[in-house]
Length: 420
Figure 1: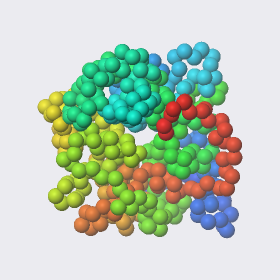
Figure 2: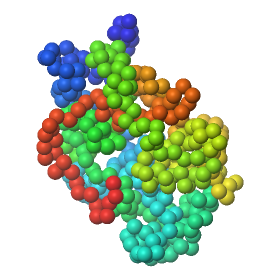
Figure 3: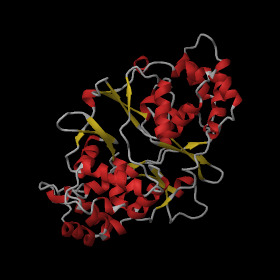
Figure 4: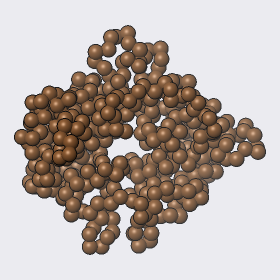
């Protein structure tokens, strides 16, 4: 019935792409395993065939944009990252000279969190200290401003940290290019239009890229940006097709999910300062964590690195608090979104599934809720595991031996002192 429904209804660009995979699936040699068939199908389709994502098209950040402006651009367009254009590059510059990298929202957040950490007493001038980074990027005056704001003190878990930071000259004047050598500044690894789907899927899963730019070499500009979310949406649109159903009807355990078990999940308590929650995510290198009620030990919410944007763009959320907790933060953000229906960013909600869920059901849930992680729970609500978009894509394809060869030799080198 699903097949008939798809045939009768208007097909989305993603569904048409799925039909293309279906045609290739039907002509694969019968002795191949389902995974080998999918690999062969995706290797035969160029990334130029991937539908354009309206939310990502033509979103670029200039290298001389301030961090404040970059946060607003990313939040307004509801995207995690954007390519950075070198404003000093000539008009006829090649793409390698035109783009200096990808700035991620998480990278800005990590830089901000670093400003709240005390300078190491053993090495006060180390490049990893907030003062040294500020001095290197903006001169000694900005470094002194950090000290004047008290951003290295223990009191910075209070709500006034964000008020002090967002009103400071440091935040208003620091340029995107100034933080290009620190923390999560992504290398500019781009694909040509002729590269395969398989290459793109492997980069988004095994090689942990959140998004992959696709270049038009003729114009030297980005033609498309393919994200993990866009791939999940494409898969959701392929429901009913034979190749998808043969994989999607499998239970989570049949494909080795979840990869992260319950005792491996990083958690925060709802009564902890919200700044501390963001610091935990930075330290543990995770994009989001469940929020736990201390008395019951049950998960009552979710918070992600991206949610810090509300503290940067909506000061009314914390102005009544000296030390806003995770619980208060989530409550205030929901209230803010309720009052501002047109606000682009959405709160990262706590969404769960059961261990007997199928891949297809999980993909549809992720696509419907527009989220990046789902928590696997027992019947009593206890956390059993965590599944991300990357985990699902990693179960769709595998990397053949020697597949990439010298592919990564073309990646632009990371800036000095980078921490990816």
